[in-house]
Amino acid sequence: MGVRQKKIAVHDLEIGMFVSDLDRPWHQTPFPIQGFHIRTQEDIRSLVTYCKWVVIDVAETRESIEQNKPGTRFLAGRQQGKGNSREAVQLPPLSIKDPVSYENVTTMKKELKVSRKVMMDAEASLHRVFESVEKGDAPDLRDVATVTRRMVASAVRNPDALLWLSRTRQHDNYTYRHSLNTAVWALVCGRQLGLNEGLLNHLGLGCLLSQIGKLELPDHILRNEGKLQAEDFAIYRSYVEKGVAKLADTGVSRAVVSVVQGHRERHNGSGFPEGVRGDRIPLLAKVAGLAEYFETLIGPRDTSEPMTPARAVNLLYEMRNIEFQEDLAEQFIQAIGIYPTGSLVELTDGQRGVVVSHTPERRLWPKVMVMTDRDHHPLRSARIVDLAKYNEGRSAPETLAIAECLPHGTEGLHPEHYDVTGAESRWSFSRIVGA
Image 1 (tube, rainbow, N blue to C red):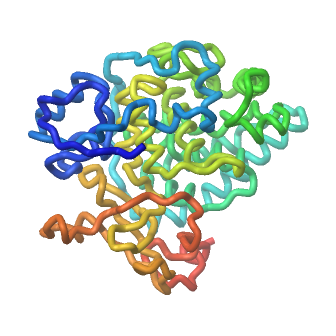
Image 2 (image 1 turned 60 degrees about the vertical axis):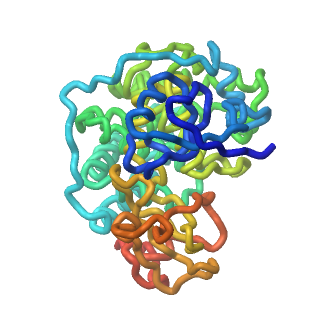
């Protein structure tokens, strides 16, 4: 069924309508994504403050969103938990004690030289831990705790470097990749929230260890974890408790254990293993859960089609106060951007590239490393286009913007073959950042 767009006055808006466009640029408003459903009267009041009229998609309803379609991946994981999976739960805004205000203190290019080694060491440390668990031995977590502190330090200095590597590095083992990337998303979000470095260390280590219990699950369950029937899902959800048990005698902090234990709980009580909800879920576990879910969407196992980062961001926004606390979801989106670093995109003139970085003030106009011409032919030399600067002083028809976000692995787009600062493509990425 097609979607018909209709221009209406903001005072005529009703809850349930889908706002697809505004009478002013999106980046001049507080709305973190372009296009959203109106879920509360507060959404309408915010629109009234900024706009006189908007465009709505008349035929679009909440039920048309992908996560509600029968057979959609990850659906089993949400439906099998306790509680109504669409129930909204309102909590007071998050309150971070003594928040830290972080600023980038180094360039992305400089930080890449450090973070590349950090990510390699993190993968090696995880391998040793998982290998010990598979042998039935008590894991030695000292190395992985040390590398977590290095990841935190890198994220504090400049988070774009870790984000870039998490999206462009190749990992042979899905569990390693999933754990590492989840930790990166969580650290970027925690930095945005102003968590101090001690809390970021607990958060990062908890994310790296959050999948450890899956080592005891049958292979057929792991291969199909997004599409499990009730009987297999009951076995699958036991991985959280198995992971907690594995950490019992390792000397790891209670804060880290709480991340492992609570990363699959959900805001409205639809998660597992306990089905707790709202403020009964520790903050670090909430951040880990949101980050892990986002990584599952954009980087599923090979048997599932990945969701584009932009679509995943849109989905998270739709789940505010349902599976994830509202202001936490919005802070996550503010931290990673509508088009996160490493996202493959096509511009309005047909050129294709990868997002290098973004700024909160220009959410729809990030920096893009262009890798193809308008006919999608690879360029010998990539170039960086700062869309915000490029569009300064240009009229709307002259602006260059992102037309769409492309799936990871789109044919012909290989960011790792280019220098992120725009050098010749014949230089290997490993040579650029240095071994």
